[in-house]
Length: 338
Image (cartoon, rainbow, N blue to C red; front, side, top):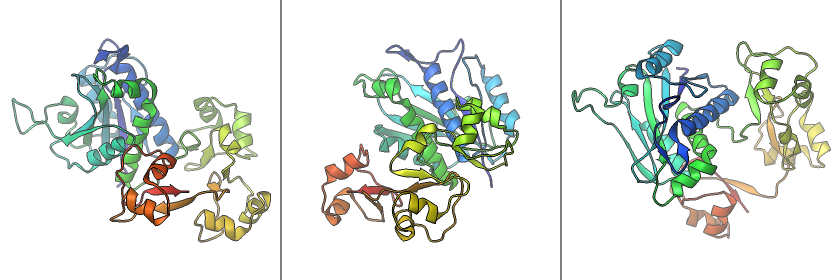
């Protein structure tokens, strides 16, 4: 079943939500929601926002926006984004009584991997009717898979959450994207901001405008000779991607031979670096061209200590090289090995 995602930015307009330390919940949730929307666009996952500006939405308006876009079916996931208050710290996820905790756990695990303190994944029942959800956003969207994500505390007394919310909020939003893609079984693209997948109604002009490019620049970095686009086509939307010395973005007309020749390596080495089993390439594909580091895929039972010992390195070196803030690993995770 293809899932459609409704991204809800909590509060807005006259409703500021929690306020502390010079921050407003409504502003933070809008930043998170817009970031998630952009990333899902890049990954080709259909999504919509309940609000994309600082407007007031009362509960019925918000619910109607959710249900009127994709309907009230099991193929709809609602991500309602919020910031906590009350002097605590860490992230938590609340899921609807009708659903299981898998999506919530996926997202919380990813938030922990980027440094957030884990609180819990839980359900909350209405005190008036224990058969119903406490929160209207879950209760009034009865057939969707709806969750509330509380990213951190705006009034965290240790200031850890506050500092993250103030200066590094995109990594929290990216954690939600990663948890969601794992749940959906969709390939996760770590090249944030580099690609966009063409959707129905898109034009070169609309895409260029979305990513602050000119149409000519968009055509140039993608080697496009016409204005014709196809749904599902992947476009490079960052000029910076071409300047990364460790990667090369496949363009129209490229072959493994031409790329290998360009970087003075053999076709076999290029295939080996990128774990390619055939010679097929796709426009927009990211290829490694530098083998200064190796990758290791985490297997069941692995720990940072056991992996470090296996490759004659230290746990701290592994953690630093992979930007790990905790020792938690998951099966299938890719680690850079020095």
